[in-house]
Length: 370
Image (cartoon, rainbow, N blue to C red; front, side):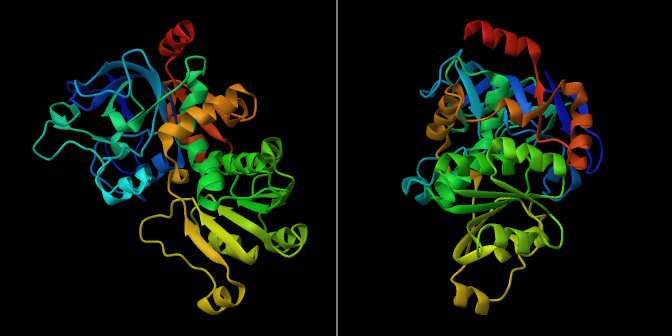
């Protein structure tokens, strides 16, 4: 099968023929229909998220199940599915507490086992155990959520990262309440979903902050009540709009300056939720403990929207089918696998919300079977 491989840091991906191993007892083989391009993939390309090479990138994928292992009971051949980075063991302390997204022993093949993917006889790493920029995937059964057959799979793909991370951060991590005020810093794929998560939660004031005017216009389509250009006066503007600061700020970029901005626009008692991934080694830089004590401001992280994804993703699909969750507007471009490098170049410019690599034959088959 063909897959987009990263062989060298800061080098273009190459489309190579790789070998997929046989399905293990608790594994699922998926024919990929669509796979979104995410900034986390770009962080791997630039070396900000280091790991062994070569690697198949992509972790926001949808497709059709074509084979299941002998012990798999959660999906069957022919199911339409979305994958998630939050595969879980079901036995560790975090899983037993109901926090499967924080699993301490994610299922994986061991060092002595055959690799799931090989290239010219050598092991190939799957990004976060998935590797969606390929014609097929071989993944743990707990990395798969079943979709309703009427859900278009090109739209379903973005549920697996952009939507579950953004909407989940609002609903599950921050637990935004009706009538509260929200600021969202960074209006790419994740930030736009934070905005529509805040809209779904009933937030009264939703302030979108970004340096790209076209993204601010898109943010308004997703539910932002106010927009602020990210300039030196952004904090002052957001505080004035919210009449003293927001109840919740969400940072969706992963930079020191934008994290500090998120903290500065909080009202006393407000909460900053960090979603954007920092480059490895970058420290969090916020005002000192004295300020935090006086104002009781709080800071927390949110991993994949704190979501039990096998429950949440079908719910989000239902919201889309009801017309309550925007996905069509989220997808800026549909690309072929051979155009993947073009997709990442456009991402660097900050001009798109989400580009999705599509496999037209699989999408057509899925549409016919739905």
